[in-house]
Length: 73
Image (cartoon, rainbow, N blue to C red; front, side):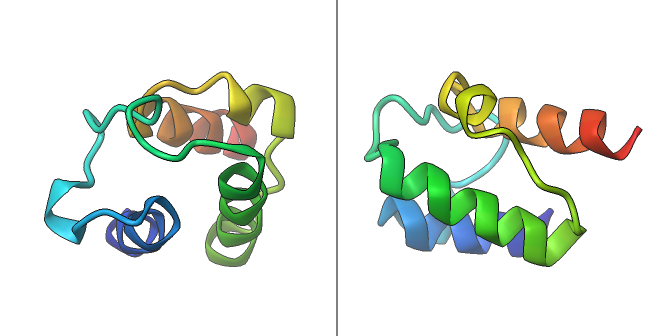
C-alpha cells in the first residue's frame, strides 16, 4: 500500500508521512477530482475499478483499502 499512500499524499496535497489507514479524508480535499484521481490510481496500481459513489462515502484511507480488498475478492 506504500505506493497508494504516496499517490494519495499527492492527491490530497499532504505530507506523505501523514498518510496511513487512519488518515481522515473528510478533513482534506476529498472532492470529485480527488475521487476520480483515486479511481485512476487504484486501477493503475491494482487493476481494480472502484465505484465512484462508494469511494465518495469513504471517510478514511482504511475505507479505501477495504474497497480494494472487496474488489479483489
